[in-house]
Amino acid sequence: MKLTALQLSAFNRPDSLLVISTYPDQKTTHTGGGLATYTKNSLLAIRKADPLRKIIVLANIIDEPEIYLEKGILVIRCWERSLLHFYFPLTKALLKFDQVKNILLGFEFAAYGDLFTTGLLPLYLTILKFAGKHLVTVVHQVVADLTDLAIHTGIDKNKHLNLYNRLLTTYFRWLGFASHKIVTLETNLADRFNEIVSDHKAIAIPHGLYPKKAIDQKLAQKRLNLDSKNLYVLCFGYLSHYKGSDLIVKAFKKPLMAGGKKVRLILAGGENQTQGQKHHYQRFYKNLYKAIDNNPNIIHTGFVPDTRIKTFYSAADLTVFPYRTFMSASGPLSLAFAYRKPFVVSTALSNYSSTTFDLSIDSIRKTIKDALSKKRNLSQLEKLSQVMATERNFNHQGSLYLSLFDNPSPAPIATVLN
Image 1 (cartoon, rainbow, N blue to C red):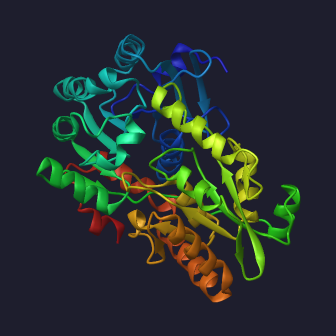
Image 2 (cartoon, rainbow, N blue to C red):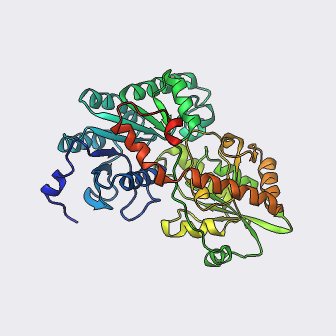
Image 3 (tube, rainbow, N blue to C red):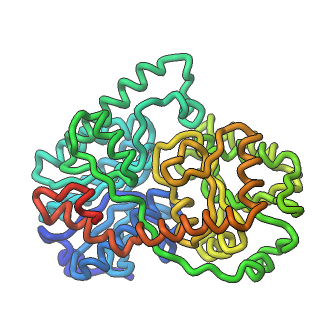
């Protein structure tokens, strides 16, 4: 669809909302990474809360620059992940919407480019602040110490780790200064951010979800050519070190039995797009493939398109999240809630459940076996998902985001959520 200048100008108004973020491919939701997916879902919730609100998304270029309307949201794909191709086209686009005061920024490390490009972002946001913009930053990752993320980030933890930690603290403080409000996707992350920056600018709007209806499990397994005599554990999402993708693969190096049935792992995920060009990540990914190759206990799907997500979650008996550290809310875990699937997590995610395992292979295997061996255990885990699905419904969250712009002093999040 080619939009006229008159149509575009209709979005240039003071009460519009301008969004800077990665964004999924047109007519999809689960492409482009977790930040892209979350941003689109959040904006759909905002649109539902206020259908008349004009929303503009300044998004990443996928194949070529383009402008289109999707579900009433104006999407302008205008920037790429590099210094010159991010700030210059972004500034040009912002100037076209000079009447818009409210900006929502989705922030995730590596979303906008390399270390230098990302490092300049707080300075750029400070300029926007002094230009009179009202900026709310949704911070997807809050990390105070990079020790557990050294391999994921490619940092040698024996060299300069303390320096990187100090720089990270400074970065978050500057990001907080530039923003009128910081939103995190879990209360623990908001508390962590407030401790880092020594104020109470961060609030939590827990990672939302749209409740989903699963299909019959045997039908789903049939569609995926799975043997219904087996039990299936699903580990969903982009493969990475901090998510423990290598740990769950090691846990299924040997056969696992539960309740007299063979347990197989469905590793449903592919290469992380924001990390894919980095040498340390390519090395991790290559080693992971070697461990998966020819293992009869593991089914590796690669990237799962939107149309197949429901089938994989419906086919699973249990979902597992072996994260090494808690630095951001988990989109795949939110999908487990949405489909009301039983789940187990590592101790790093113990804020979600009391059924946890440590990062040893024996502990992972034992927890999975215990959960699958008793129907009572699975039933309790399923009920927990049902509770989370009700509490985190995206349909209740659009108004929370709007309140951050429409109210000069938003109520504390404990008040808002109740």
